[in-house]
Length: 249
Ligand SMILES: *[C@@H]1O[C@H](CO)[C@@H](O)[C@H](O)[C@H]1NC(C)=O
Ligand SMILES: *[C@@H]1O[C@H](CO)[C@@H](O)[C@H](O)[C@H]1NC(C)=O
Ligand SMILES: *[C@@H]1O[C@H](CO)[C@@H](O)[C@H](O)[C@H]1NC(C)=O
Ligand SMILES: *[C@@H]1O[C@H](CO)[C@@H](O)[C@H](O)[C@H]1NC(C)=O
Ligand SMILES: *[C@@H]1O[C@H](CO)[C@@H](O)[C@H](O)[C@H]1NC(C)=O
Ligand SMILES: *[C@@H]1O[C@H](CO)[C@@H](O)[C@H](O)[C@H]1NC(C)=O
Ligand SMILES: [Cu+2]
Image (cartoon, rainbow, N blue to C red; front, side):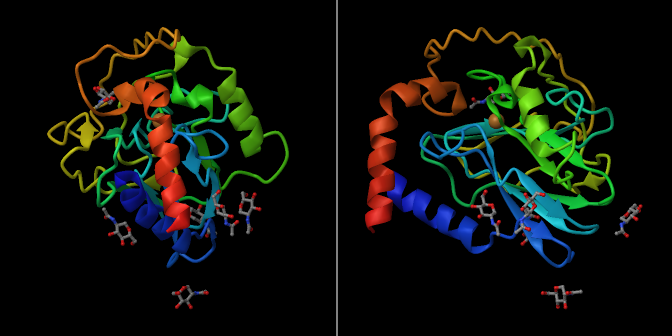
């Protein structure tokens, strides 16, 4: 069972390095980008963990382990949770096929100002806006008060689908920056815009047109997150079986 052999090492690696709150810049905080259909608390559409702390100089290591997946890490603001923050960081999209890839692509974001909260979302609209579905995260959010992570996530769930932003921002954000685009991109995975696009060109149509009908895509592409709904319909049994094998192994 292919799911079992691919998934088990990824999950075990993620758990082994779990370090969600760091006050020591030698630590690495690992965030998994996307889940699988049967991951608790949001399935495919989530960052795990989604609320972390990281001091100046700490690397937040985003790993694109969700499968299928086609996700981004895009900085926003508390008040506009699904809209790119001007001058904010942006990984761009990385697509992962149903069966995953190894090694997982990753994106290292280094915190440069731990005195402000950093809010981010996934800007993918297919099959429905991930941000609204709960694919949001925070670094150094206050534990309570109005600007808590829970309030941010709640606000994201209220955003109109036409407002989820598609602008492509750069590697250097406000309060955190990356030095390169996600890598490696093994065969089967894809980076959008592709690696030849200049980082931080700031282009992008912003014309999101999600239908929200939930119809399975009719594309001829055999893989990738365009098939998330098809996977939900036809691949659920395979996924559940794969995970069962993993836990029995
Ligand atoms: C930070 O972590 C490094 C590596 O684990 C360790 O050597 C160092 O003592 C730690 N610094 C502090 C202030 O705890
Ligand atoms: C870190 O986050 C993961 C995923 O949310 C969670 O399972 C784990 O318990 C967290 N670790 C700590 C030490 O809180
Ligand atoms: C991300 O940072 C970790 C920890 O420093 C490092 O092991 C890894 O190679 C880095 N990944 C990339 C793609 O730079
Ligand atoms: C982290 O860096 C920012 C920007 O330079 C600075 O304002 C802040 O005081 C630093 N944080 C700590 C705990 O020194
Ligand atoms: C880590 O930080 C999160 C977000 O602030 C908080 O909810 C959680 O309790 C912290 N976990 C630990 C082990 O300190
Ligand atoms: C991933 O998403 C990007 C941006 O929406 C899109 O251009 C691309 O076609 C998608 N790729 C796959 C394999 O779904
Ligand atoms: Cu996403």
